[in-house]
Each structure stands twice: as structure tokens, then as C-alpha cells.
Image 1: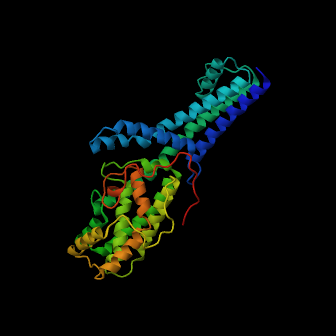
Image 2: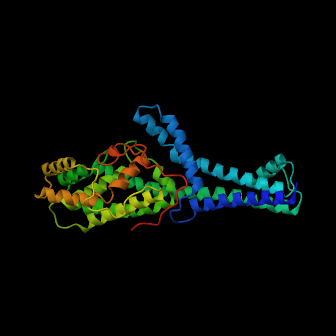
Image 3: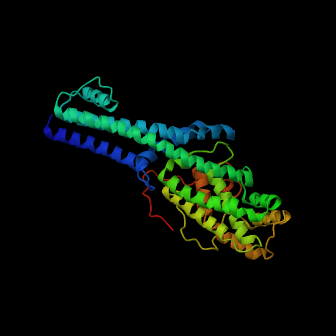
Length: 366
């Protein structure tokens, strides 16, 4: 074999290994939302396989049970893909260094990657290559092991908020129901400490964790009827109704909660390449109809909530708040296949806004 062919094989193998290591570091270590091509291919591949599995299942419970395996199964497949590509890359490098035939190069690479030790290199360059492959394989597994505790810690924090919202807003959650229950049980004055403030911090946590640990968006709640997307929508709708339609003193906490939630959902949507208008006009159309808004306002009035008398002005104010998160809420509900909930997943197509595999991340919007 020519020296030029060996150089090309070694360079190709080294490039493949470097790409895999960079992908793993971007997925696990880099503390910012960096969409990784390889990880996205794996997650979308598993998603398509599950979609085929549930294609003919009519019961929601059966579909939900299968969808619950999407993120965990993808995380199990991902390290195997990393190791397989590393093994192939090192196979090419061993072959370039003279380990022949190709079958022997593959066996040597596999022995080194998995630290099995049943075959040994016979010269210094091959030995150094074997040591580096063993270290690379161990490092990739160590990265995944350290990745999981961080992910499940963020998952637990998120699910605590989802459960809290179900307590106040029902299952499926509704912003109107949330305000009704507070009005009937403890009074609207408790909203600041029990809803706005916890969710203000929760939205900040979701923005950070769901962009740095992208798989979190696809981890489903313990209850099939719950979802972090629909819970977020219910809280944002409750805050929008409260800020626009309830006759109370101006609440900075509810408005800050809307602001934090909008930025959080936009950041996650941006991470997955979902299009949205970063600066919508308050008069732009929203997915909530005037009739639906009037029905919600009537329910609040019957529950004893002091609804503003000027219904037209209240509606315009509500629409002005909702337009900021309307598109991303519905898109994320479709993208994560969230369970049914009013004013969110009930009007989001199941196949809406599937992010392209190779789409680059845009600059953050604020």
C-alpha cells in the first residue's frame, strides 16, 4: 500500500475520533446550549423508531408509555454510537500504522477501546495509539456517568414545579382553574409566594438546564397527563389573566413571571431550531379566541375574582401578554408531543416544528 493512502487513512481516522470527542464534550461538558449534530441524529433516529412503534396505537396510554422511552433510550444509545465511531476511527489509524489485514486492525482497536487486552500492539507507535484509544473510551463513559446525575437533578426540580402546578391548576393544568382555586381557597394574595416567585426561579432553571442538557426537554413526567410544557403554559396564562383582567393593584411578580417564562420557552425553542417572532406586535393574532377568553373571564367572575369591567381593554391586554409566548408554547407542545391541556397542546399539531438535523443555532434573543 502506498504511503499516501496510509496518511489519508490515518488523517480520516484521527478526524473522526476528534469529531466524536468534540461532540461528547459539547453535549456533556460545555455549559451553554450548543446543538450537537451527532446527538441530534441519535435522538431523532430513536424518535422515528418509536413513531413507527406507536403509529397504529390508538390508546393514548399506550402511546405515552412508548414515548416515555425516547429520551432514556437515546441516552443509552448515544455512548454506544460514540464508542463505535471511535473504534472505527482507530481501526483506520491502526491500519495506517501497518496493523494488517483490516480485520486485525479492527480487533486491535476493539481490544484497546474496551480495555480487553486480548491483543497487543507490537511497536511503539501502535502501543501509544492503543493507550490513547483506551483513555478515550474510558473518558467517554466517564462523561456520560457524570452527565446523568446533573440531568436527573434538573429533572427532579422541574417535576416538583409540575406537580405543584397540578395541585393548584388541575390535571391537565389550566391557568383559569389555577386562579379559580386560589380565589376560592386561600385568596389571590397567596399567588405571589406560591406561584409567581417559585415559577420565576423555575423558568430561569428550565432555560439553563434545557439548553445545556437538551435531552431534558424529552423526559416525560411520571404522570401521563402532565408535562413541563403544559404546566408552563398554564402558569403563563394564569399570570397573563391576572395581569390583564383582574382588578387588583399592579403585580410586578406576575409580570416578571411572564417575562421569565417567555424568555425560557424562547431559549428552548431557539435551541431546537424552532422559528418564532422575537418581537411580536401586541395586536398580532393569537391562538386563543375572544370567545374562549370571555368564557374564562366569566368563570373567574363566578368564582369571586374581581374581573375588570372593561372587558374589551382587558382582552387586548391579555392578548398583548399572550402573543409573546403563544407561538413557542404551541410549537414546544407539538415538538415534545405533550399530553392534552387547554390553551396549549389542544391546538398544537402533533407533527409541528420538527427541527432539522443540521440547523445551526441562532444567537440568543432577549
